[in-house]
Image 1 (cartoon, rainbow, N blue to C red):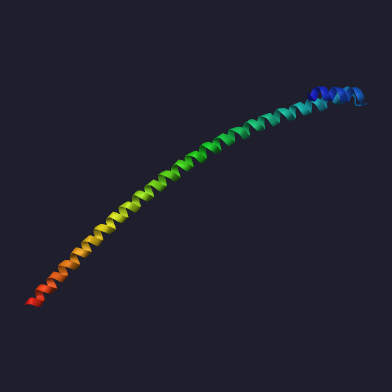
Image 2 (image 1 turned 60 degrees about the horizontal axis):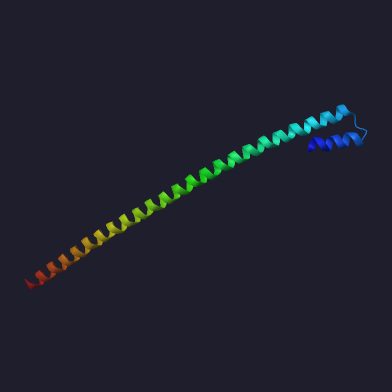
Length: 101
């Protein structure tokens, strides 16, 4: 396509053929560089998608661990409260016994 357009330009202009060939080679070379860059961009995009997927998986695991930790803390607090309630009841019982004497 580009080559066809350049051929038309050369035929209709006063540009020397050697200059037109150099221009065409430069355009083709730049076009090939662009294709390589596009491939690199696609590869980087794929790596970004994979990285973001891994990051999302890690965030999910982190949330699961935080929930587990929260449950553990709640269980520990419940045990602590039960122990304190028991101590309060025992202390109250001791106070009642002391009043009787």
